[in-house]
Image (tube, rainbow, N blue to C red; front, side, top):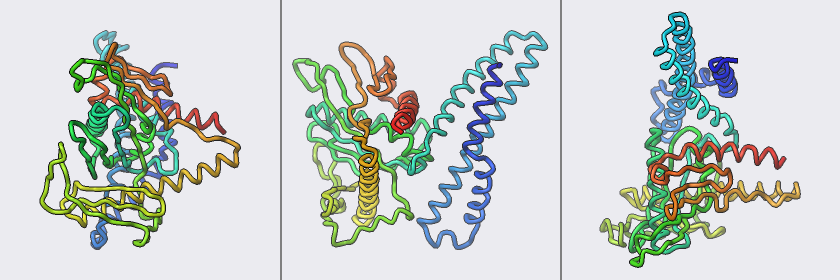
Length: 365
């Protein structure tokens, strides 16, 4: 079988899983809703409909573009062989190499079939053991994910950034808005470990520090997460910037404590107290949704006599000294360029994580 035939088979499999006729029917239905004159009477629903339409159109366009490129490559190769054009054959081989990578990336998407995989992702990064190095590491991880999102053209909305006194972040919470953002980024959940010569140690000693990454699905209207007012305590405070300095003169930042569970969330990046409270409630809903999912999973594991999985524990090491390497401890995937990873080059790790998770779940059944 030629490479073009192999790529064609892979693309056909992806098209079948994606259900192109179903996607086109959904696009037609959503386009009718968008055209309705009263669409923006309900702004939340309007935003949901328009963003879903945009995502589905992008999905179809991506598949159609790959199919067009593969068909063009087949024609170009045929002409190159007929005319014995070595340069044209080299160009086709380069295009087939690019196509193979693009199709493989899309193939990983077909592995995302979890209940909430198609949703936006709510990401929280926290500095853990390691003092100021851990806070600095947390900030590097936040930049890494923001750069990854930027590379893919994904929208990011930052809800809260809590700065450490000397440098870096105590914690940060943000949403990545993209199709399958949760399913994609959920494999990043766990403890990340950094080993380097500390820039904050005047004796130049090697330091190991840790940061935790939590990834949750963003809640939707259909989730029915009911939070009675009596179950929450709302505190307001002034937003703070690096070094603890106040960045505004009003108590616009909001902290919400969910009394039955003890879950605490805060938001300080919106301009008004009302906006911050609404954003904090969205974060709280996502946390409670995840708690409910974990409870269901725990019950299922108990029924199966299974102690559950531990893939959310320590999962990746970033080593800057005495050698340069980033290694995923679950998948064994590794690269020798930490700077590129910290600049958002994460797709190899994410793809390997998604494949590993799919296999782990299949093996557990």
